[in-house]
Amino acid sequence: MWSAYSLLVVATASSLIAGIMGLTAAWGEYLNFLGAPGFFMRLINDWGGASTFLSNVVTSHSHEMLPALGAAIVAVFGISLNYNSYKGISKRIIDVGMIVAIFGVISMTTIYIISSYGTYVIPTIGSFGPQGVNGIAFDDSQTGIIGWGALIIAVGLIGSGVLSSMVSTKRYLSILEISTWLATIFVLIGVGYPIELNEAFFGFGVNGTPPTGGPGFIYDDLFMRGHLVLAFFLMPILAGIIASVIAIMEDKDVSQIASKILLGLGLTGIILGVCGLLVYMISSGIGEILAIGISLIVVFLFAILYITFKLLKI
Image (tube, rainbow, N blue to C red):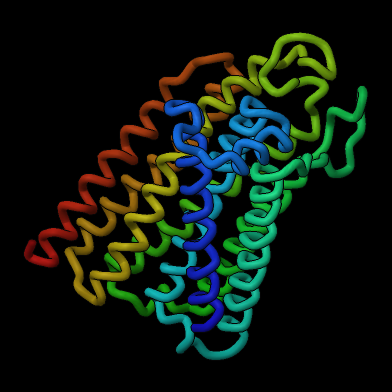
């Protein structure tokens, strides 16, 4: 499973780099770069000064950590399912997806390094509209490549027919794992990209007129708040725990009823979370559906951890 292990290595390295960026930001924000050598302070001045540098490094840290973690989770999930033993084209499709994700991680990491520890200004791809405010940010296009890789891997896993041969608990958890990928991709790419392509209206969550804001700023602002909680926080936690449980549970099983309850609880939480995010955004702040979805996901997390402890007799 060379492709999955390679993805795990580059994703882990990217996660560490994102962590270093976060520590650098904290060093400057809370300690004012206490103890920094002179050459480093000179570099910061060359990069635009402390304020600009901190803004860039925080942005790079916050944008890099989720895709890097997500790529690692995808790799762990593929390894835990032992896809190397699959027959036919399914294994090749999964390898292609892993390679696509590897390219996305390397490209994304390179961009964030040179845009934080350097003077590289991330451009907008295909800019149009008033003063070119509409278009996909180049870094978002590269993080999106990781999502497309995960989507290809999902196609290979589903097409292999391996899910039907699993014990019920592992099968339902695998379905739920892939569902978290699809939900995250839908939120970040399916909703996020159209917003970026219409920034003349959405205006990066800022009231005003292009290029300093847009009349639909409130929708962008609410999307930012909602998707940070759901897609940037809960979905990675959910995907990470499910992938870890699948990796350690081997072929241990619980009852069919318990497995179906887990699947129903998790899927309902994901669906209500995604739908609730859209309602929250479009309705200018009605968040009850989103809150219910988040609550169900949290309940699922406690339930799967409890069942895992029971299976492992911890």
